Image 1 (cartoon, one colour):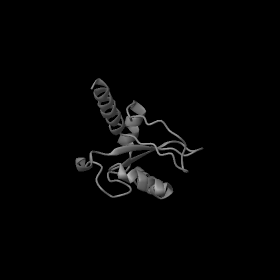
Image 2 (image 1 turned 60 degrees about the vertical axis):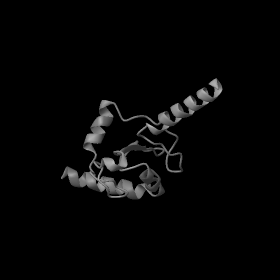
Image 3 (image 1 turned 90 degrees about the vertical axis):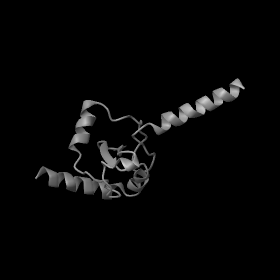
Length: 117
């Protein structure tokens, strides 16, 4: 009986640890292996505050909409390039983003240029 309790407790802890992390890394061809770190230090908070879009670059849904669980702060990593913060409405949009990251990064860059005017 105690082995079953330990097994269940371990499964619950593992699920909670995995599902609570707001940043998702993807091991794809466009970027290197990355640690999945929470966006928490002052520089990252400044990047969130300066992010040029209020809607998800993939779906167009509002980043303020809590119906989807709040925005996902995804750190896109590409070899030889600086890491990029991409704010998405939900976890499903990470996969869609990674299907054509340059398309979406260009849209973010255009929004940043427009915001700077």
